[in-house]
Image (cartoon, rainbow, N blue to C red; front, side, top):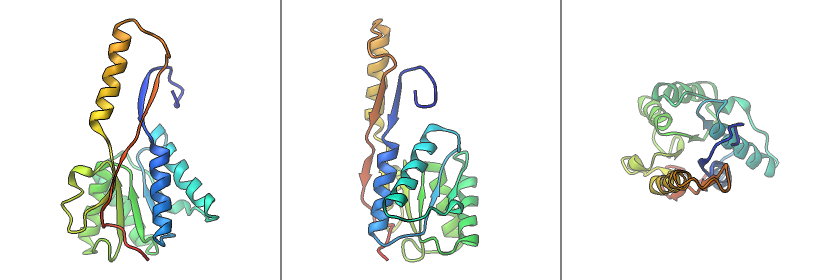
Length: 187
């Protein structure tokens, strides 16, 4: 596996999703993009950070290290990290959140500061589709296709239960689903 484990695994197309999203935000005029990730040492955070950095490099733009924040996917840490960006980097115009509870924390921070989405701050999420429509301006999100993930895991389990070790270790990459929302403004 990508983290040095020798086992079958099902992963999302994290790199492609965040790269596409970051480039979309660049196309919308954003240059100061905050990125709220999960733990720094896990595969998904590494892939998402790599995509974010590559999108900047492809456009000849510098990455501001202080715009990238890590957490343990806790709502409280998402809020704390978003608060930090607002306090220390008011030039940030959009925040990409990389997890459900991180997004909830960021939304709590935005609400507590009485900011409007997307007028005052744009926000886009990853893995938050089930609540994307509760805001007046629906969240722009990449959703996890849970059914596809479950089928892929089930297929691998059945294959291994039938003593079929062909292709070991299998890596199955599942594409995220892009759901258009209006939580990111053009600038």
